[in-house]
Image 1: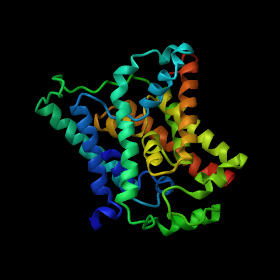
Image 2: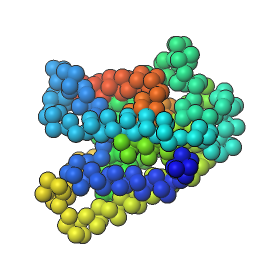
Image 3: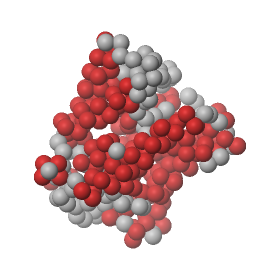
Length: 185
Length: 127
């Protein structure tokens, strides 16, 4: 039990993620979390505005159960499987974050500087979250998938489009982390 | 549910881990993604080798992605920008909600908006 409560090493987590993908494939589904955004838009009536949302979303209901499971999983892991130890980040990362103004790096899963209610109640704070979310939602549908669909499933299936998309993910991520972060934080 | 637990316990849902990954300061995230893909290739290869049928009795075949460069590169870069800023991708967004980080709801709502706007502009974008 104590072992479970510690952070899990990558060589345990990575294969488990692959196992989840394989199980979904075995049950005739695919592993793709971002598709739910489209499904939720359709449920909300977006089909009235664009044909893109006119699809048989009822056939995608299983994917929403995966979402529900993911939420419950997040709850279970923090409630009963955590020992509250800080994340073992590279000391260089912590130092870099401090110069950007991030205190207590790694003490929690998310930085208070971005996700605390205090931060959100400022114009800059809420703008960051809205812009970030918008980019994720727009980009993932444009690219036809996210980390689970392209990086895990697509690469496992040796698909060239997924490799292009993953390279794109990293170009975007590196641009943000190395060039845009120093400008906004 | 397992997905949620694994991603919390591996800290892959942490903003800090994503930042560290993009700074190339830790092997952790690369190890997770790398070993997941390695095992994933193995799983799918075995599935095809033994001609495993799904529980619905069909041959295993993942839907192929359309051939294109623009949409994957452009969409990928846009997604990457958001991924690094929010420190979460579409799976972890929901998982973080479960961990009690309710402010992630703003990111989820904005992601829905982004998806909706993509749907509106789809025919006018190069794919």
